[in-house]
Amino acid sequence: MSAKTSNLCLASIETCSVGTLLAKDMHLFRCRNGTKTVALSTIHLLVALSIIFSLSMTTQTSVAATAPYQLACFTADVTIPLNHRCMGVLPTKSRQVVDPLYAHGFVLLGLDLPIVLCAVDWCEIRNGAYDQWRDALAKAAETKRERVLVCSLHQHDAPVTDEVAEKLLSDVGLGGELYDTVFHDHTIDKVVQAIRESLKEPQTVSHIGLGQAIVKDIASNRRVIDSAGTVRYNRGSRSASDPFHRKAPEGEIDPYLKTISFWNRDRPVLAIHCYATHPMSSYGRGLVSSDFVGLARARRQRDDPRVRQIYLSGCSGDVTAGKYNDGSVKHREQLINRLYHAMVEAWDSTDRFPITTVSFRNAKLELPFHPGSHLTEAALRTSLNDNGKSNEERILAAMGLASRLRTAHDQPIDFPCIDFGKAQMVLFPGETFVAYQLLAQKMRPDSFVMSIGYGECWPGYIPSDSNFDEHFEDKWLWVGPGSEQRIRRALETALSPP
Ligand SMILES: [Zn+2]
Image (cartoon, rainbow, N blue to C red; front, top):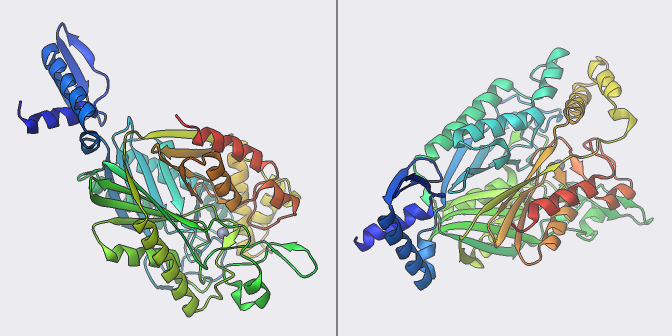
């Protein structure tokens, strides 16, 4: 057996699951992707196993070079058409596409079942629409729904989709006011096609890279304390034109941009960046854009087209660029620059480790619905049916009612975690506040925890107990006190070492 052949055997057997006894001295090995079957006699099996053992004892590189994992990266254009509703309720619909919206993602192969991550330049994907995305992508990648991590980046000149809410609106003559279902289905098809294409040429990944950098002068918390000592949550994404909001301290944020990269030995394949802030520099004028986060990502992509770049928004329900941004073009450029430079710095600080094992866990999360009298099923139906209310008010009622109906049908939120041993990627629902991201890091202080926000988005804002204690309220809030305890439990399950 030549050296080349023995390497092939080693790679094959490391990617295969337990053999099944075929005959007296024959063993059947089925590869994890289910595509190959190898029959070996006992004597050949013993020779192969001895080679594996001797090579694994001699060099770490041999193990790394034969890592069984593969990555298929995909991209699809998900730009909304003109005259499409933005952020679910903004009065000005899309007027112009300033720059396109994208879905970027990967399929990770080599586990029992593939894992998919798909980051979408949309505001939110909710309830039935969230399931539509996950089911379609799961089918394309031949995996299960809960192993498909779909997240929005939460740009605001971008759509909110919710299948049942759109149906409810259609029933009262407002079909298409939330989103264009034909465009939505077509977009999912495009992403599915992109996944299928990517799976034709997956790339071997042997190493994971971990890097981080402090981001300067982007994030600040909504929470400020006014001159009378009253706590307010009113610092928005472009509040810097107000001297009070510009001067108030940053408050609770996570200053780090984290980058997880995947490598085939020395060759980088993919970089995934995650930072906790709302992604808007400006919005509400119908100017469709991936905003400063997407433009920083595109700039980084131009540095080296061979390394795919994905950006994810972290847990940032209460974090915006409002201390440093007044909505001007000048500030937008500054935000792009600062985020881009953090991506470069995190990359430069990257340490690489062989990928020895990847595991997946999924907790089930049930969040308490907001107890407000305006959000009972009866109140929501009344608002939805009221011709005297604005379309935006009726859309909000439809979204609330869709979530009410879903929780009544006992459909918990998936809370998935991809565990790479030295690093974990955990997907939170909705606009989870940054305290949860900091909590996740405290739970695994020995590890590199990347917290992704804006998975299943029906909850809207997800404050912590202390925020509820300070009477945090908003029309984009559909969960109630008690959410923190439920999330802590789910997080413990998701982040527990295997
Ligand atoms: Zn938001």
